[in-house]
Length: 151
Image 1 (tube, rainbow, N blue to C red):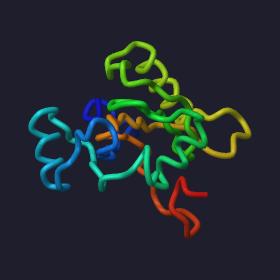
Image 2 (image 1 turned 30 degrees about the vertical axis):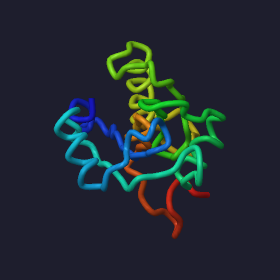
Image 3 (image 1 turned 90 degrees about the vertical axis):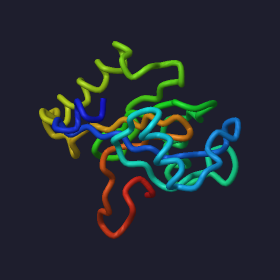
């Protein structure tokens, strides 16, 4: 999905986490190797984060916005380019799910053709994450001297 949609402005970001069944005990290099070998991951993987305990700032933000906390691996957040959570998907929702795909396409269209008077463009980032690959996306960048998503 990342390779297919990245040229349209969509990104998947992965955040490894060991909070779900101890499935990510390895070093960053081991996790990267495992994900790229077993799952053919080509999207960025970040440092290991906490979700259930010692919640990382990225997940504190995602949870606060969506009111949804991942319960297992492979949960996903769809996030707009403005950093706002558009939707949360449970781990049972697969990348090829028609509703997920339609939501991504709608968000990408909104980013290209925002509603009149919209203050910021929406979209394009999936946060497929499997807790181990918590994807929080949007190619977050520093803006106004703060980390995006930590306001």
